[in-house]
Image (cartoon, rainbow, N blue to C red; front, side):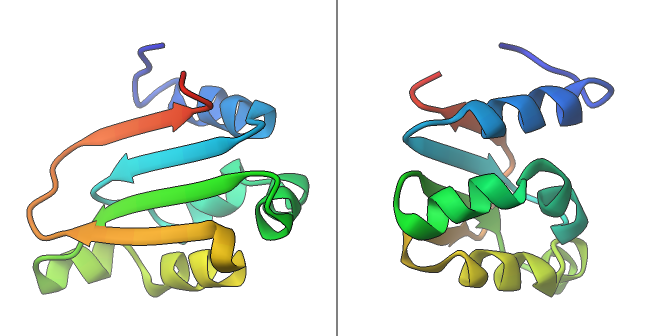
Length: 102
């Protein structure tokens, strides 16, 4: 599925809610308020309980990256526990979302 900035939030939210095994998010920048919109309490509980795993890659290579991807993202991931994995890359410039091999 190819999406644009105008249509992405609705489609990503739907795909997150329909995930049954794994959610992979590779995006240089994403704000905590966006994560709060796309991850319902039900999905967060599935991650916390281990029904779904979440893997997230973000960019942290310059101070501006931390300003754009706010510290709430780190708190969001930490609150989900051991089934939410966060990695970073210093020069990442990509956006990819994978849900259960889709």
